[in-house]
Image (tube, rainbow, N blue to C red; front, side):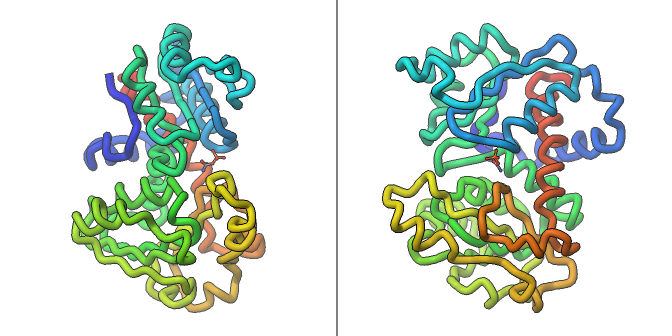
Length: 304
Ligand code: CP
């Protein structure tokens, strides 16, 4: 039985296979519409979500399966003090695969140790978000046509932004990928990622606070929200929340084929005026999320 806790649980070849299946689903949805008949997906969300939970539920329904679950910890017996381990042992008896989001880093590892069905990490604290990374990779493949030879700007909350941490871990496996890390001093990428991921893989990267400085070099600009829920002090959040607001003026010098991505939800960090710019890919990105999650469900249930 395989779980997906960290993007590194998947080899480059497995990611390529998932992307090919997702692309085939986009072209031939009817071929997959009964693949999961009789199967149940449980979504256990101890933290809020729109895209991840609903795209997983939509994915399973589009595959002919069924869904059950909860969307907040307070509507489950967690509110009475039940442990994650006990919840997982029980829900494994009611379902064939479990998708779980939890505020504590490492909670999905504990869940996987106890689970009798595959566990998918849908985000654990400020740590990892591997299915967002699969979504990002499908977006990059469809919009840029390649994973190699890309200069990727990551902008915003690089400290708490788990989507950024997972995306870096995935992209360092491809040749000639460079990162421009754009953040305020307080929200810089954690040193463990610099040491254990970037330096270890000899990846070229630059840290800057200026979003415009390297704009003309970027193939991808990945904007992120300042993660309010991870701050201990509201005053710090208020001071930092609008550090970057991407607007038409800031992308004037960008490449013609710049791809602007964002895992969403957006707060203020991208002006709505950019939404109709051909460089804006973030709503397409959210759409791709359903297809790659369909492919992932099929893989973990050994239906493809
Ligand atoms: N990108 C993402 O994880 O969105 P949600 O928090 O809405 O699931």
